[in-house]
Image (cartoon, rainbow, N blue to C red):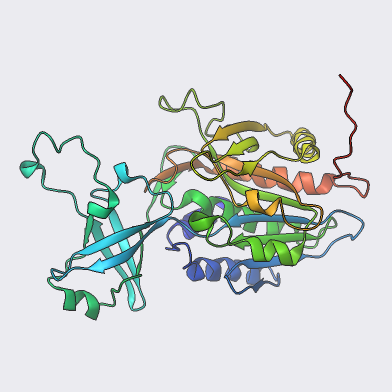
Length: 365
């Protein structure tokens, strides 16, 4: 189920701030499950499964949007200039296929790469800043581009693709975080009609833009616990082996530490009771539980933890991913299956006496 859901969602463009088509696809799956849902003014999609009020309420969320670009200028020649939206890696942009998401429909295009035969030695190893790149959609003039619906502000995404790799591995666009979206749909199906805590499932917006699109939903729902589903950096390739121990296909995991460290002083140090909860759930479900601690990683959970009069107990849970923020990211669908099983088990482990208050109780030196 998750593999098919993931492939479906990866083929839908949904730039940050333009997530409506992704939300519509997810809402259709909730409708088929008979689960009510609602949206807020920013576009967050919320599905609440009422539960036992004696248990702490739980919000589990993941983002629908993807990174990409907007058009900042339509040249007289019909070529298009880009403004970057989100953490797009400039060294992986030239010659990429993209799609222009106009009101009249999606148009294929390519980020231009200077002809190799005309590239001098001093240019061969230079990474062009995105401001120097341009997009060629085949238009012969500005008027032709405008007539096709291309305007300043038009969303631009990597051309949606899905590649079935060996075994259970999948490569494609926007696996970050359509993999999380697929897992959350599967969790909704697994928990529907079951006893447990009040569970708020949220598919959020604008994570790749400013990490704060989910805040209206979190404020309205006021959960006791927030769990965020996103990628964990897979560290099993030669260029990543020194970064950690998370391996693709090694099962779901949790983040023990995240910190952006590049101008944004924020991150998550998880609530210890939630770490213990996931460790217990993994044991009950017979699952491996990978552990990640990274600088350079930031999620919207970082801001949710500070909401409300007492704050929110938070933990990032996730799945391994290779080649993050590139046009072709790689995940393993068995990790997503394991993640759903882990979350399901964790929700079943919650009891009325589950204590979230961080009272002084440590040993004195």
